[in-house]
Image (tube, rainbow, N blue to C red):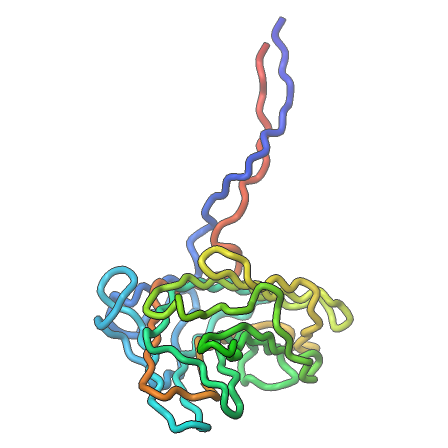
Length: 261
């Protein structure tokens, strides 16, 4: 007797999503890359160089000039992209072999900011910053606005020691997701970050509404202001930059199959 038995074949395997909105390995040797409305804007102490690359020949270099104790330093690259309620970003980041996060005075250093153009409040605005861990390395902190009001910064569970002395002179892979909340009263904003595939920030119930008509993101910056400054010239590098409005890899959907007997 032949009959068909429907079966759901579940799998934990993953498949790549569609091509990302933006993919730059910097092999052009410049920052003229533009894809799907995503492009570079507003560079500060940035260059594309063959000095060090994760893959290929080129990478983006962030140069922080040496600064006296108690003064800051600055290197930042901004990008713009089409308005979205969800953003994914992934890149390889080289930590300088002379990296030391100083602890004197103001010492929070920007790491990754995602926001609505104008970078003001009201207007959607969140960032991950770095705080000194007391051993020359850094731990994560989260900063956000809700309805135009700055909220208390806090350290996400898992974000301690995101940069350690062991990371000096090495590449790490950073991936992050930001999703705006569904309404002004909803505590469902999302900020997630992975280091080398390990989830180091998993916040899924944040109040971070951007304001009516402004609850979206269309701009970001990489690294940025280092309030601690650095005792020596300090150079980070970024390679293999990806930007998307959905996960880069997502689970396969269950499939229906027929079993013959």
